Image (tube, rainbow, N blue to C red; front, side, top):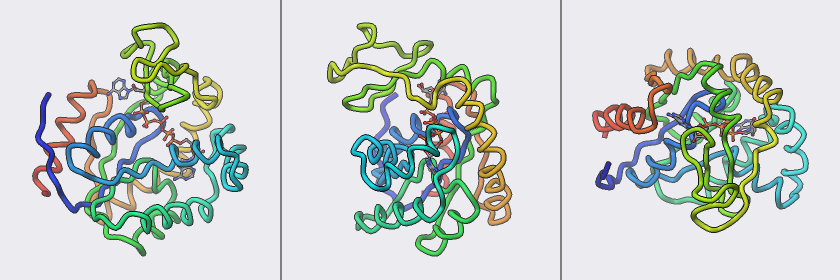
Length: 219
Ligand code: AP5
């Protein structure tokens, strides 16, 4: 599907449990709407690889499927926002607690929250089959999107690996963490009339079309 790039100054949040498709949709939205994509999961993984002070603190929470404490995350996102002068942010995996949402409201006005709804069974199916390039971060999936050569990235030739938190026991913890700590954000944003639900169990193109139609009305 070819879609012209559209520049908007909307600030968007993609909300959803593990494997809901936030990252997949964010990559397309970032390009098509010229938004600055802030994925707290990607930033944290890069901090872990570089063994920074933040990465060393975050690792144990991530490995266990728990959330990294709010104070660390909020400081990290604040500095990301400051680094980009351009308006129009796409938050992927942030906020994840009411505390984070309140902190974000103090910094920026959120225009829309898209909640990607995916059940536990589908999330486990997707995440158990996900493989990621250790070099460029490209995502593959043994069920839906295989690389041409087993274990090798089509884009850069890097090796593909399974995220440590994509093991079944950690996926379960992440899913429980979502319902325990992040799901209260559904009501938080419904009360502010910002949230629209999207059936995330459809294929990636169908999900994207639905999000696109929601944003076209806004922008
Ligand atoms: P993070 O990386 O954000 O993990 P997550 O939210 O669990 O998200 P995922 O990347 O697993 O799923 P996704 O919804 O992005 O789906 P994706 O598009 O990749 O966070 C990791 C950890 O960091 C957290 O557990 C926590 O410890 C910490 N952290 C991060 N942010 C934090 C915060 N704000 N506060 C505190 N701690 C934080 O797709 C998944 C798979 O499904 C892929 O293989 C894809 O190809 C496939 N797929 C996607 N869409 C579809 C579709 N429509 N149909 C079929 N397959 C699909």
